[in-house]
Image (cartoon, rainbow, N blue to C red):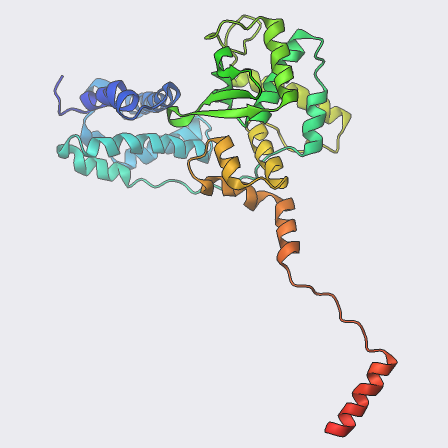
Length: 335
């Protein structure tokens, strides 16, 4: 294959650069790959250009913008997903700029396509009351419900992203004086997260009853013995949230997703006065700046800080009779 062609560089990008040089996770590689599969399908159907015929000159700002508009109108994706697709395209053409100077101009044109401004969505998280109610619903005597409870408890207790939970194996749970869950997250980084005694007891019970003893098998599986999926975990959450909402219509007014457990843990720690640095480490953020969004969003924390730092606006008490007489005497003598 000619080393100066678009197909050659695309192959090297996915076969070597992402997995080997950057250490991108399989999920990241798969996500980026899916974007380019969609992009080539678009070029084939809408531009009449099959993948094997693609050249640098075929990638213009207008065509990339057309592809993104197509995804929004025909595939029904939202603005944030559109921006994720564009980020994947930008990442490849930024890589390409330094590999083949002949295509530098085309790369610069693609990189000029702007991201679309998206409205800021409110952060959905549960109150402490809602969290306790949700965890009280599964019947631990029932095997399936014990599994469901363990999934939800670990999502909350560890602040795990859903993929981090899906990828957990028995070897990632270390039982000792302090129970620790090892989460493998973004950037192939592993972070140890302590698990409290109540949550650890639920995990122990689940592992024992389900015989999850093979160190490298998935910790959570469905009825077919296959690793749980994102959709499967969301189904579990929806089921118990629906039950909780039926019992207490005043609670759970917002949709609760798998990520809501992560947000809830961070919010509850923040309300308890835990330093943002420790919350950052729990969530696996690279910078505390990312974690600060919780402090900016939480109304309880805002209220406490405003009370703490606001000047008093209490009305001064009125003068009594003696103070009035002393003031009048002073005025007569000095004015």
